[in-house]
Amino acid sequence: MKKLESTLTNMVVVLTAVAVVMGGVLAWVNHLTSGPINEQKQQALQNGIKAVMQADGELAVTATDTIRQTDAKGKDQTFIVYHTEKGAAVESTTLGFGGNLKVLVGFDAEGRILGYTLLEHQETPGLGAKADQWFQKGQKGDIIGRNPAEGLTVTKDGGQVDAITASTITSRAFLLAVTNAYNAYQGKAADGATGASKSNKK
Image (tube, rainbow, N blue to C red; front, side):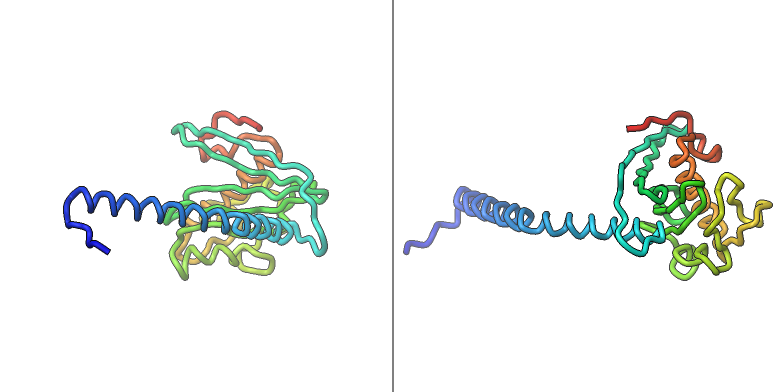
């Protein structure tokens, strides 16, 4: 077999052929894995909803609402409300100390907090990252069973919720995310601290 000459044209042809083949391989692999990945995400979400709703057995999501709000600074906020026969689980995001802090909060029909889980955060390990446990039942900042309509504020701001030690900013952000989740569930605008000005339900 004759060896290709090392010319610019030949190199471009070879590189183009390699790129096309590799692109095809990547597309094929993506096609094979996208289904299982989506199934895993859906299963993780379902498990998260069951956990925050304190459901022992099967729990069906009867409806899903996406609520979009825009604050005074023009920043979009999106809440996803998963309605169940026990109440609703709501996804809510606020800005924490290190970046976005995203929570999934379960509420009963009366608006009391059943449970929560952190879906995403960039908080400091050993400090703000403790939010995944700090506010759970029986812990120092326990909010389970409370109704956010009665106020969720850290003691430093005159409230009744103990902030995470050395992480007041994260604690405020977390409680704001929970309050905003409650407001989205109740069909109200986000907490005044966000400057929310309008709400669109889809």
